[in-house]
Figure 1: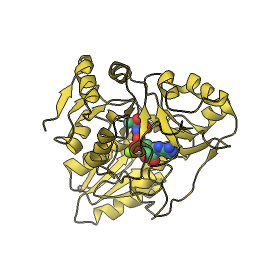
Figure 2 (figure 1 turned 135 degrees about the vertical axis):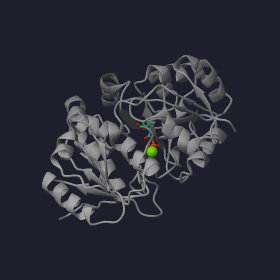
Figure 3 (figure 1 turned 30 degrees about the vertical axis):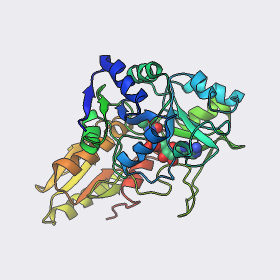
Figure 4 (figure 1 turned 45 degrees about the horizontal axis):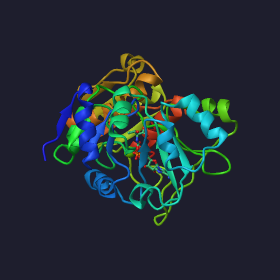
Length: 338
Ligand code: TXA
Ligand code: MG
């Protein structure tokens, strides 16, 4: 199969493919998603095959209107309506109880809930509205690899396996949406993202973060709780302090292999960089670092042979919680200690 690249003004053709049960990747402000008709069980199961994704990890249902959610979900609570009013379209995915039998087990992983998201990308909202059906929307990467923030990342992973990619340039945020479970008594964050705990609590009061570890036979409530995630081929190591970076560079200088460093400009300019060390700038601050994290990991995977990637750690609050959650998973929890 030849994977066609669609420009933003070609969504009609892309929508037609979706209606025919084909797979089409789409842009969102977080990362690129892999779309398929959420009401077509065969199409949804093809998404698992294309990604190489374990079939018990449920899919997000991507919508272009709240009315589309109401076709499948139980009547929306006031808190859920407030969240939608405040954060949609945007980087918040909301887990809701379903009307029984409305979405297939392929989409829900057999749960009686589903995760709904209305992304903030005009092209994709138009794509879904034109198709007239909700589309499943896992990140458009091979399972286990960093999520795609450029159409070329999607092309690299899925070329020949999907019918098309709608290219709308780089994504803004760079990590996936915040997931909040609103099907339980106390609203619970299953995955941190650009919408922060503080912002959520301002709208609906107390929320709790779920650090539950998923056992082998359990259905995971959020990605990464059970499966290896965001992992490039090189070992990623988190570096917490600039002083540790200096020690990491001394260690690197003694290696025969190439070593990678991903850090903000401020850190990079202060380091003595040995000859065998390749740098990738994370820009100025936590916003740019989050925007560039996955792209940087993919850069080292595709365009270099480094054996370790030393990557700057940030404080675990606000957007930093989303960044550190992804970095921690790509590093398998490993920190560089001098
Ligand atoms: O920003 C994003 O959310 C991106 C863009 C493309 O929309 N999508 C994304 O999808 O990150 P994915 O599939 O990589 O992550 C969504 C996760 C699933 O892995 C699953 O663990 C969780 O949402 N999920 C899906 N349905 C759920 C449910 N009913 N209850 C709890 N978690 C659920
Ligand atoms: Mg994913």
